[in-house]
Structures are given as C-alpha cells and as structure tokens.
Length: 191
Image (cartoon, rainbow, N blue to C red; front, side, top):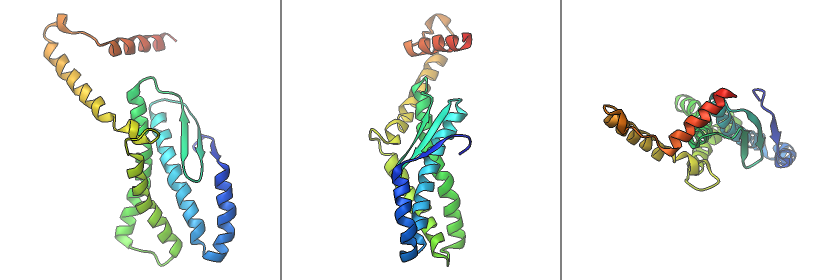
C-alpha cells in the first residue's frame, strides 16, 4: 500500500475462511461486513502513516488484524510530533466517513444490500470507532491526541511571554526543552 508493506494477522485469514463460505449461506453482506471492517481499520492506519510521512518520518509497515491495526513508523523526536501523528488515524477515518455520509444524505439507502452494509460501517461504526479511539485511555490514540490542548496552550503562553519580553533582550530566557531542541537541531544539521 503506497510502497508500505502491509501484513495481515492470521485472524484476517481465519475471518476470510469463515466469511466466504458463510456468504453463500447467509448472503454476500457477510463478506461486505468483513471488507468494510478491514477498510475502516486500513484507513485509520494509513492516516497515521500519511501524517508521519508528511512530517518526514519513515513508515516501516502496517499490521492489520480483524480487530485492530498498527502503523509502525520512525520514533518522533518530540512529543508534539507524536501527538500530530496520533490524530492521523481519525483524519484517515474522516476521509471515509465524510464522502459516505454525503452520498448517503444525497442518495439514501441503496436497493443493493451490500452497499447498505458499507454505508452502515463507513458511517455508524466508523463514528463509533472514532469516539472510542479518542477516549483518553492509555493504548488508544486519544491518550496522546488530547495532549494537543495543553501543547497549544503552552505555545500560546510562551508566545505571549516572548512578546512581553521582546523589548528587553536581557529578559529572554530559553527553557530547558527549547535548549535541548536547539542542540538536537544543530546535531541533525551536522550529520
């Protein structure tokens, strides 16, 4: 996928082995449910990968299972970079959610049942996954993603402090984090 290796967990193969024969008995909607679920998880992980790529981090691989996925990328240098990447999953899901919602609002239900399954998964289940994933619980993206609020709050405070002290250069002091960032940036430039 976009030059990124994608690995499927054995649970995906097991689900396929169950869904394909079951589709002949219960209808093709069963197969479309599995397809929709894997598409939803893929869009989420691709979202992480796209944001990591935009920030010039190497993406190593994407693992997909029947329940979750994981995008493996180069470890960010700064916490705020990891925060931005954590929002990529939700952005990826929104890429699927918004067009599907607009098409549904414009066209309504389809007379072809499998399309309704896709609509159900790409709108309702997708929204549910977004809400659950943004819960501020360790192990979910929300644990890191919501740290964007204090991050931007601190940026605003630092900007105000810098503006207040800019008239007198003697009052400008760098925090330890800013000094560390400068040192790392200088080291990167020398390498």
